[in-house]
Image (cartoon, rainbow, N blue to C red; front, side, top):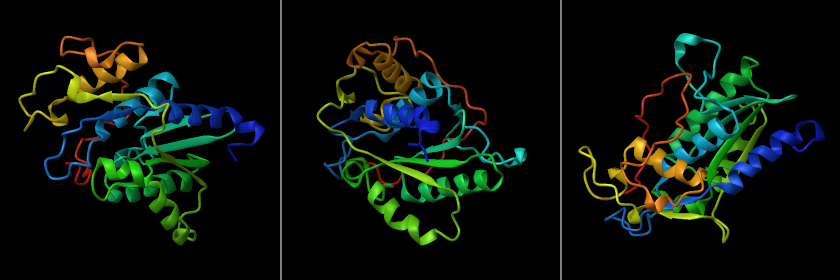
Length: 235
């Protein structure tokens, strides 16, 4: 559907964003598992900026016509001939099932035509943490729900290649925040993450960011979503 000439603009925009996504690492982020080195919170922040700011997707809009529900999607955009809701998930697999519920809810109320699910591949998920949603599992499980999930869903698996820009967060000189338990990636506040991500978009070296650097543009959510998601064992 998205590769049809009528919707080619939507397809090109989505694929273009995914191809530009960088990799954020913190090599010593986990004392328990040395293979965990990718920081999913910064990946989320990058997609927030890329979709909501650079490409004018609605940020955390309602996924239902019931306003009091506060059931929020990640992103939504109306193109000329198609309405798309996007869910970006680099966290726990249980959160992905919630994403699919939100896609189906919006579709059942004619708010969207197509769902978009962006997840890491198994190889990338293994570097984020344990029980992380990943492409191979998603496409394996989705067909089993074909009678209950009635909307078309485009699933994209994200995986770095040689062209992927890598940001080593351990090289960034930002002191530990008061709420941080250690000197790992948890020392970065939400504002710190936007300082780092926005430096990338503005063509600056993210490794030179300090707490005195400007935060840059931060997207404003339509629905405020509490940051209480269980992201799985990420170190």
